[in-house]
Image (tube, rainbow, N blue to C red; front, side):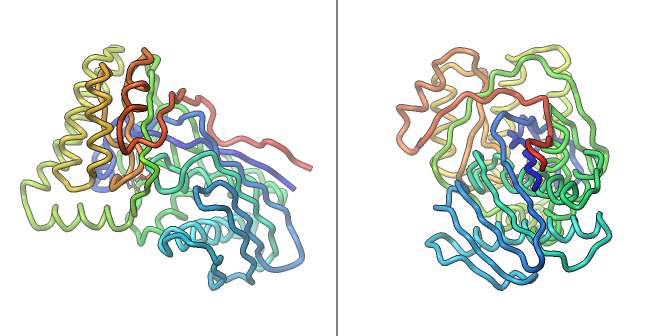
Length: 329
Ligand code: PMV
C-alpha cells in the first residue's frame, strides 16, 4: 500500500491562452489530493471521498463502464473516472505490466472542477502511488509528463502541461508549450473565493477555440493574455504586488471577453477589488468555481464572506512541495 499526495494550484496568469502556446504561471497551493493505491489480484476498485461529490465507490474490471449511482452531472463523474483509468494505464505502462488489479482510494481537499487543479493533483498522486506500489520510482518530471498524458486523453487532446507540471513539482512554475520550469516568486498572499460550483473544462476550452477560429480579435485576445504573462514575469521578478494585481485584473477582463467567466465569478472578483486587494481574477477553466486575489490583509476575505454567491473564502499559501509519498507499507 502506498499513499501519495499532490497539491492543487491557482493560475496567477495565463489559463486558456496556454493551450495555444502562450506562457502561463500556475502556483501550487497548500490544498492536496491524497491517493492510496494497493495492488490486488484483479479488477479496479475506486473509492473517492470529498470530491465535492458525496463520495462514491465503484468496482469494475478494467474498462470505464462502471458508474457510481450518485446525483451529480454525468460529465463530472465520467471525468473523475476517466482520470483514474488513464492514470492506472500510465502506472502499468511505466512498470511494464498489464492487467494487474488495484484498489484506489482518493481523499481530496480540492473541490472538483473548480479551477484549483483537482484532476491534475489526483492524476499526479495516483501515478506516484501506483508506480511505487509496483516497485518503480519515477522522477517528478516523468510523473508530470505522464499525468499530462492522462489529462490530454480525458480532455480530448486539449490540455496544457501547466496543471500537471505545477502539481508534480510544486511552487510557482512557468509553462510555455513543452518548456516547463520552476520560477522564484515574492511572498504571494493568495485569497481564494469559491462559489460552490464547477465548470466543464472541456466545453470551456472548446468554446474559446471556436471564438478564436471565428474572430481575429478573439485570437488577438489570446495573444494579449500572453503579453500580460510576460509583463507579469517582470513584476514577479521585481516583487511588485501592485503591478501583479493590475495585470491580474486585466487578465480577468480578457478571460471574461472570451466567455469563460460567470456572474458569480465576476461578483467575487469585484468584491475582492472593493475589499482592497491588489487585484483579482478567475482561476482555471472558469464557468464557475474559484477566483484568486492578492491581499495580505484580512479585508478581501471579509468582503468575499459578505458576497452573495460566494460559498467559501480562504487564504491559500504557496506550496513549495510537489508530489510526495505520505505512507508506504
Ligand atoms: O480548471 P482547471 O484547473 O482544469 O484548469 C484548466 C486550465 C486550462 O488552461 C483552461 C486548460 C489547460 O489544460 O491548460
